[in-house]
Every structure is written in C-alpha cells, then in structure tokens.
Amino acid sequence: MWSVMLKTRIVTAIVLLAGLLAALFFLSPVAWVVFCALICACLGWEWGALAKWSGKAQVVYGITLGCLCLVLGLFLLQQMLQGVFFSLWLTAGLFWLLVVPFWLWRKWPLCRWNAALTGIIVLLPPMLIFIALRNFFSFRELLMACALVWVADIAAYFSGRTFGGKKLAPSISPGKTWAGAIGAVIGVLVYCNVMLLFAPGWLEMRHVLLLQPLFVSLAVWSIIGDLFESLLKRQAGVKDSSNLLPGHGGVLDRVDSLTSTLSLIGFYFCLKLLFFSIYFSNHP
Image (tube, rainbow, N blue to C red; front, top):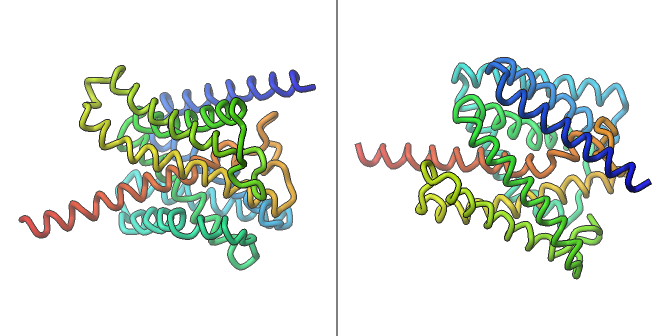
C-alpha cells in the first residue's frame, strides 16, 4: 500500500512540476494571469471546506476569489491601482508577522465572520506576487522563491525523519519536530550559498550576505504557513484540504508554505518601495 501511495505521489509531483514549468516558460502574460486565477479559485474552494461551508458556498467563494485574482492580475499587468496592491501586500505581510503567531498560540478557529476575509488575506496576495514575479522580474526570481520553499520542505522532512526528537507543535501537527525545523533553516542557508557558486554573474557575495537573513526568515515562515494550514485542517476534522491531487491531497496542501513566504516577499517589496520613497523625498 505504501509503495503504491509513494508512486502516486511521485507521478503527481512530476506532472505538477512539468505543468508549472510549461506554464512558466510558454504562457503569455495574460495567460499566466488566467492560470494563476484558476489556481486561486481552487484555493478558495478548498478554503471553504476548511471553514466548514456548504458545497454551494465553497463554489461561490472559489469563483469569486478566482475572478478577483483575474481582474486584479490584469490591472497589475497594466501597472494600475498600485495603491491597492501596496495595501494588499502590506496587510498580508503584517497578518503573517503579527497575527498568525498569536493565531497558532491561541488556536483560534475559522468562523463565519472571519473566514471570508481571512481567506482573501491568506490566498489572494501571494497569487498576485506569483503574477508579479513572473511578469515584471524574471522566471529566475519566481523559481528561486519556489525552490526556497521546496528546499526547506525537503530538508525538514529528511532531518526530521533522521533525528526525530522533540515535537515542534504536537497539538497542531504531531509529525513536525524541532530537528526538522532546524534542518529546514540549514538547508535554505546551504541553498543560498550554493547559488553563489553556480550564478556568480548575477549574485555577488555581498548579495548573498544580505540574502541569508532574508532566506532564513522566509524558511521559518514557510514552516509557520504549513502549521497554520495544519491547524485549520485539524479544526475542520479533515486530513487534506481536498483530493484534487492524487497522493498529495489538495492544492492548498501543496502551496501552504508558499502562501506565507510569497506574502512576505510582497511585504518586503512594499518596505523597499516605502524606504526609497522616503529616502528620495529627503534627498532630492
């Protein structure tokens, strides 16, 4: 049984990676927005299940979130409504930095009055960053952000299984250990430094030294993003957010760590923009 499940997971992972890379390299900017909107719609539908909504409410919320992502993504391509995106990414970053740690500590449940708004804050800003990274920067930056999360997940998995030890959050996710969390941070640090060896033309030593603290913080929050979804699934009484992906559960199960890290990347962009606007206003 385990071997069959493992094979299913591997096949699904290969198909997902191939599909992502094909979309990343071959879709037009508008088609990429549509692709991200479809993912956002799936995430919204799965979020409704975690909120224990009815099937109809899940579908309506998923379609609404997907359409919102589509419309805002098209505005983003035209570089319009910049204040809206600034507010979204700033709000999402503050949510992950200030609210989610207390949410995990207090184990707050998703309620009817907070589920819809929380879903928008958790799901929409990272998908818009997904659009922005691909269309305004390069494939390299987007793959680098995704690879950071993948490295953290893989390093956490193997270090946790190898060393075991004290549980990280047993009441939320019994499988996660402190050894896994430390392994994730070490893995991301190694990944950050390896980039210097293979890409000296675009990543100098001074950039790596600046990126290391940023990468470590993103690795930590990728774990927090995973824990946050684990808490919501435990409260909803489900093992996976859905069964859309054979062997992997739902789409949200695959991107839970990315929701936090991409949101914080957006937050970083906002802080950088704010810093330069203040600097140049004081140094004309």
